[in-house]
Length: 274
Image (tube, rainbow, N blue to C red; front, side, top):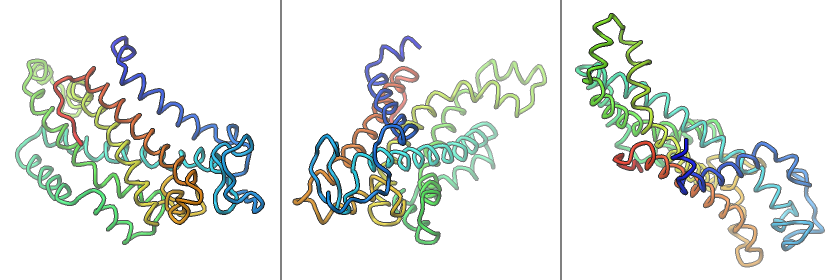
């Protein structure tokens, strides 16, 4: 714990993520306007004490929508990373531990999914299904779980030959117990790092899909949707696009800093998975 608190990347990234997480949780208490409230007498109002980030083309308060937009971005990132982790960790543990046919099957699946770019796979899935936050989570997760499988498999291959694993087998421990109690705790470090990096990437993918109209659907606030709506007003109201763009950049920076810092603390030799 002391190593984490003394790592500047971990602290800085953690503070950034904490701030946006508080925005998402406490949004109704932070903002003074309703999320969909329109004021046509204040269209494109510049930054002021009444509207910290100005207003958009419908007179909606941009600060309010940026704060509420953090919910969609963080929820999609958390859901995508969690689902990718469940799939990838399970297959990585099974393939690395049992080897043989099981490993060939898991590696075949990994290679098949890894052959497609994450964003392209997300686009295909969303076109097949109905666009929305839940579909976006699934689409992102399907593009990122192979990273978890590959990292876990490599770690398990090195751990399964250790003496304490042989000792556990000798006293009658079953495969499930060995995987749960002896292998997983010793290979979870790289996965934690990978989760943070995945969440940063997931925010970019979610914003991209929402920008294209294939992610979160209006009028639900999303940073990607806000950037899409601001395209026509870049010169007239630059604040319309600046603040959601800054929110995306800061959140991704926070997750990347946290991931880099955790990598330095938990496993300095881990090759960064991007």
